[in-house]
Image 1 (tube, rainbow, N blue to C red):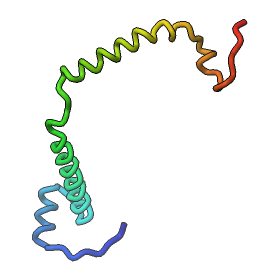
Image 2 (image 1 turned 180 degrees about the vertical axis):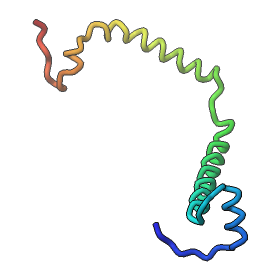
Image 3 (image 1 turned 45 degrees about the horizontal axis):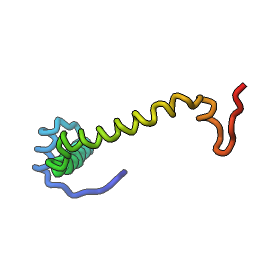
Image 4 (image 1 turned 90 degrees about the vertical axis):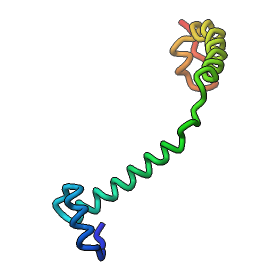
Length: 94
């Protein structure tokens, strides 16, 4: 994107040195990338403390393990052809 800007000469020079940029465009693009990255980090930090405790997760996975245990025999009796058949169409075993 091409754009015309009025920049502080001293500030852009300092940014170019700090960012090791060769051109004004490089300095501006690098600075914008840093701003976006910093914003992403801040969003991640806002999630701090929102994860559930391990024991809460364990309780939920126990019930999932029970469900898998019930479904395992059913899953074993279904063939790949039956799973891949369109809905409503039954494959006949030969």
